[in-house]
Image 1 (tube, one colour):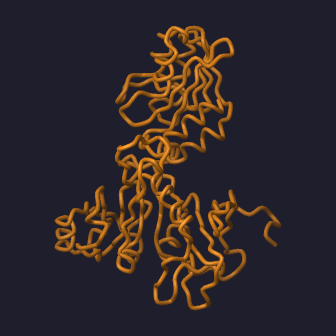
Image 2: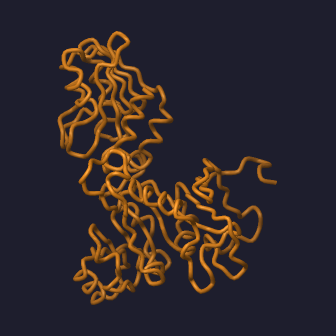
Length: 372
């Protein structure tokens, strides 16, 4: 199963919106076939492994990082292929959260006389596909918030200057982070201040799973712009890929027409305190098959998303320098006046990236007495 999960990780930058899945076929203690799902519309991991194994698949055990599919989508059901190949046993790390499968694949395999086991390395398998799982079970994408800050927690000088807080190594790491996401979400204030590109500037050689000469998939660029203040000449509108401007219904329609003429998809959403309802926006992105969304924005939008409970993970790059009292902070969080109001975070990972530290944090609940 560990090998199946390693194979699945090869699809980190390519399988979206499908889940990342790997499969290993073993007969008499020998690996006879293996495969991983590379791209939506292409063969699934099980079928690739079965093709590699040929007749040796009969009587083999299939180790799969996700329950085999049992419905006709862009490709035929993998359960049918496993039964027809004469596989004797299937071990899957977890049940597929897709309601079209969700245990039905296991039941069909068992009904065909195949022994099925579910659960080995389930936590590692879930970690492969947090966005797919959340989209299928909650109707929302998995949302990460990326931030770069000085050691004293500052993200920009008072003037707005912020290039560059983090090192070149960290910025390259962010490029890989962008490449795995379905969409990058920012606010209009960031667009007006920085005129960012919000694209992936890597080559296929930089991203495992891509072949030489293959185009690097560009995540959707989504700008939260309640009153349509994005300039039609903004850099991100002239780049390859899709740019969505998320506005409120009361926004000036003539501005929307100008942005649409510049190449944007202008979408209207319900308001929440005169701003775009972020939950409604994320729910819509889920309907567009966005699994993982990366929030790259300023302290106001980041703070609003955090207090609304919409951020699943914070990725914070800390650079070893100080920017002073006048510089801007990480989140704008009004109303936190007492210790009991604080927002608890759990540190999931700390890693050195060049001269910087990269922290992965997840919102959580403090245990009684913790943090005192």
